[in-house]
Length: 407
Image (tube, rainbow, N blue to C red):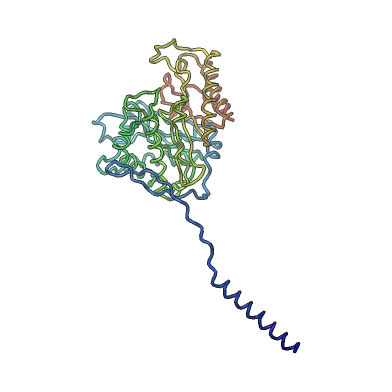
């Protein structure tokens, strides 16, 4: 009797185990709902933004924006070169004729070695694309791209960061304007230009950084007062730039991208209106402003509201301090790093005062993790600094001051 009961108990236990195994084999994992995609405008030939699915942010192994800015330390601009513009008659000129149009010589590899030797860690190459693409097909000029590539390659050879952009296609004479109506009209052309640039350089390393546009102005070319419409257009163009570059893949999937404010200005209203674009990767957007403050010290051209200042006064210093603080706090609040992509003063036989200004700007910016790029248009008395093809530099004291303040 006892043996029989024991056998039955063993039988029931075995049957229970079998049942549990069968249930386990048939069990389905709980399904996690897919993340809801965000919607973003993309360019269409008709000019109407069409919603497109932007994937959720993903992990990547590219250098983060904050690290890139930190490692740039101090930068320099190859101004009045690739960004030089001309009239309709200039459309079929040789590349060298564009490069020399504003009075600068054709540069070679020696310039980039010199920049490296002087202590620069980065170079910004402003580029105007008008006259260098087919309006009907938006195909970029191969010779123009090849010349840009040579300069990018030289900068990378000397281990510098290099920024390329869309420059005087914006500004007072540009075809890209900070208005929603202009965005609706020109978005496809703008996107196709950036698609061409991004495709051409898609396999380049992280030290090549793209900047969406330079100083974009509204239809009235107002440098100081951005309307709500202008602010909205800036954000639309910045978002289109990011989406277009990311869609080309390759290293562009995580390349750091620079997105400017309205007119690259830094008034509080402009900073408040600036929106950081959504991105498919985290921490790869850099903000940019330009710094020519106080203007009456920087230049005496067009000064009507006060008198030019040629000395480094307490007012000049306080303006620098307060403005950098406003810029630094604004971008810290937005959660992205920032660069001052241009800063410079004209020469008025006041080198000592200028040295103090440059030093103060760089030192103040450094306190907020902001890196400065010296604007250099190659013209000694109008913001030129170094000799591009030789060693007769115009203002070595200024260059030394910038490099030392950035250390």
